[in-house]
Length: 273
Image 1 (tube, rainbow, N blue to C red):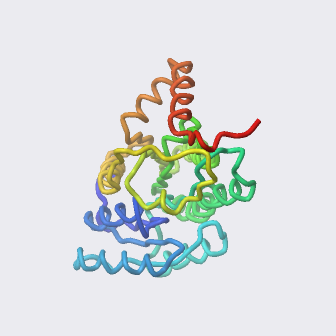
Image 2 (image 1 turned 90 degrees about the vertical axis):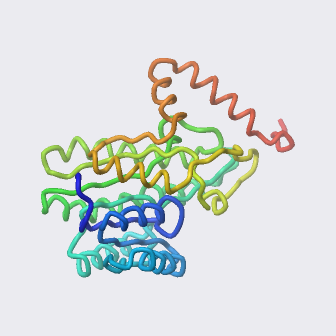
């Protein structure tokens, strides 16, 4: 997919962070955009910013949608068909998280994370895939996480949801061979977004202090990888080291994860035996 211009791109979770940065990067390349998030107010601001920054582009289609709601997703894709004529690239970026001890995470919170991070993507994929197959071309990009490569301490629900998304993408890639439809799984590391401010913290630990990568840098790397038709994209040095170590030095990964858990643990919130 060497040329982005005039491709129809749907980005979920586009009101902030990586999703917003991707919208700007695709707009800069001349793509026709559909952007969505749960908050229409925030989404409208992004659409206005895009039009101000790139006055020559087609006005983005901005549609409020909770991807966890399958009917809302169906309505979203219908809008894309009616106003854009279809979709060429689907970016599954919408996400939510819970931080802290897994055993302190309520079952409802496990479910809500899975509903957005995994089933939200599933809803979009199942609705968009027939369109892509009919065209004989297209791309689905799953924005996963380094936490999907190996369960990260205090991110039990999030790691599980992103790992499920990766596994689905890998299965689809093999099933779609010869169809013209491609799958790319992306594994960002810690990124400077408002995600951490919105996530629920159930206690027991604190986030690492950084430094974090800018969403603009992440977006540029993703778009370059799309143009090069990559299938797997690990965005951080730590992620690349983890990918290598889990295969050849699994004992080292286990040891490092235990050290990370101990370092981030809030000592005053230790469980009482």
